[in-house]
Image 1: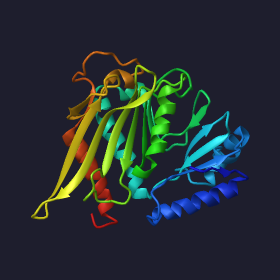
Image 2: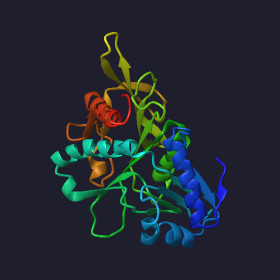
Image 3: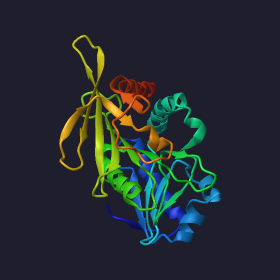
Image 4: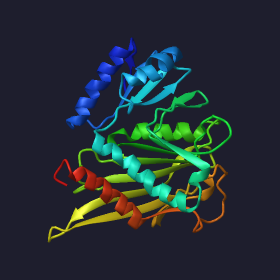
Length: 290
């Protein structure tokens, strides 16, 4: 993706507004713009300070590389698409609440917190952070939502969050939406959820991937299908999965054990994931033909 040389905040907001209008009218599925020559002072004072955020969209998400002064900005999808992150978070939080873990951690969703790790300054859609006595924000689980067209951007962020030495992230979750298929019909992958982890080679890889799609029967009835599989990072063997499992320890800020998954872990079964997708499509139905 070509970058735009940064001159001032007005030029940046004009370019972002243009991209948002293209997204709103379904003339593109790409959410990101990349700006070059953005100094740290410009990033922290002109773009992400409280005053700057007050005059621009708080839903913009930033990914800034300090050494190269390169800034990638994710433009938000229309409002009814953004709810997908909140629906997913609530699905996870219900299980964390039963484990009494929500009392010992906190999460963020679009509150404008910039997380600094190594040479990077990032702002994810949602993250879960084990509570500490310090003010340092150190997420252990991160969630990013994007379009299928922007898969390269999501994969790049997985590498940053998992491979950066200063990062404590143990699971990076991505949700890809088929932006040109609001209802989830007639598509091989209307929603794809992937859990990225760190392989023994210290490279990020897709540990588990789940595809969710709707189909319409002869009588007009809609059914939701969930197909999941996992990949071994060493042998690359692919195995069928019934859903997504996230170890309890990673939400508590401890290193994930190598023991088999247990009943005390966060388990997102096929039925839960189908319900998650149907809730998202139900929200979309209010403004479309779903």
